[in-house]
Image (tube, rainbow over all chains, first blue to last red; front, side, top):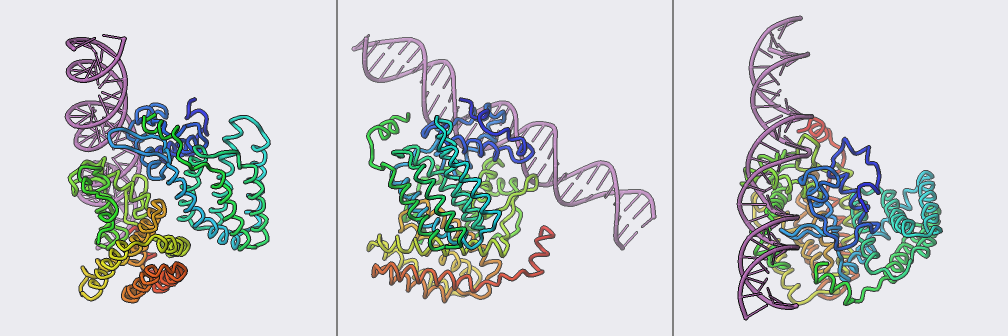
Length: 237
Length: 237
DNA sequence: TGAGAAAATATTGCATACGATTTTTGCGAG
DNA sequence: CTCGCAAAAATCGTATGCAATATTTTCTCA
């Protein structure tokens, strides 16, 4: 249940910015659902948990707020974001607009090292799908997102890479809230097909496959407004 | 004229977050070049200037840092960003990817009110072009960006809208650094043509015009590495 | 017993304090 | 006069304190 313990030792970033390290750990926790949407993240609690003052905890929360992973209300505090169906649609609309282009850019820059990295990534992704249990499930969600982030890094545009980081993180949140089944196994094969197109330098095909892939992910969502979450949300739960 | 007015009431902004207000003012100052790239923005100075403590000044600078408008170095402070030619290319590559899609989305959502807003915007834009003097020049740059932001707000995707806010702001910085001529007068006529296509619901044409428009803006840049700026940058100027 | 008010408690927003790091200044040697 | 180095000043990173706001608990009274 302890968020700090579960994640990396974070030895490397000890020297670096502490707020950023906390941000990263909290983001991981949000993305793979150890922190449920709506959960309150009080400055004091985060601070004591990571053994820093409220000042730096606050900075970390502010970063997450910029990324849309946390919603902050004045004088009330920070909460893990609870994206509405409309927000969910906008997340995927944004991805449909951006990711096909990223796939094209990446196709033109693939090196052997990139191919190896993708293969490693997909292998890990497959391993988590094979495993059972909630922990593997979480790792699977994360790995699935990592495929898209790897692609963005290959594309070589740091601005788009950052946009994708935000979109992938928010997608995880959306899937956590509105996901129907584990589309992931299906997604895995689509990832492999995309890699194949990238390897062949077939940018058009990679782009088209990516578009379909995003459509499939979104199609698995149930974005009808449900009384359950809405009620809970209204009650600030 | 002001996009914020168009979308939110934003009247209680004074009551709201002060850091955000400072962020907005600093961003305006950066975007229309009252603050030159490389200028140091010390927390204390910003704080006294806006009559707040360093805490909130720091928060404002952190926000600008996320948007890529200022670069912060640990233990050294915040500086108005000084984008490299490579960063400049990435900004425009991102815009080429996103804005045609935004134009298509906007074309499908244009209302009469939107058309009126655009007409008002373009009229103002034209007024600044006609005027002379550095002040009008600055207003012209800002107005030109506002056209793109207005389009993004019409598209109705708040995520993409935020991305565009960042990209437009960074573009202003890039144009300030690498702009050759005032392409703006040419840009103005292109804006008008885009609006025409939007009015007619011709989304394909609006999208294509937008792509060319971005190309034209970028074509006006001189992105060759020059000894002057590079040297100055190396010397932390 | 239940509803509403009032007090107690918790949490945030912001300012300030202090050690750490960087930058500038002052000064003497070459 | 310039260079190098040490002291001083400035600036940053972070903790903490206080007032304002929100939340919870308790108490009162119908």
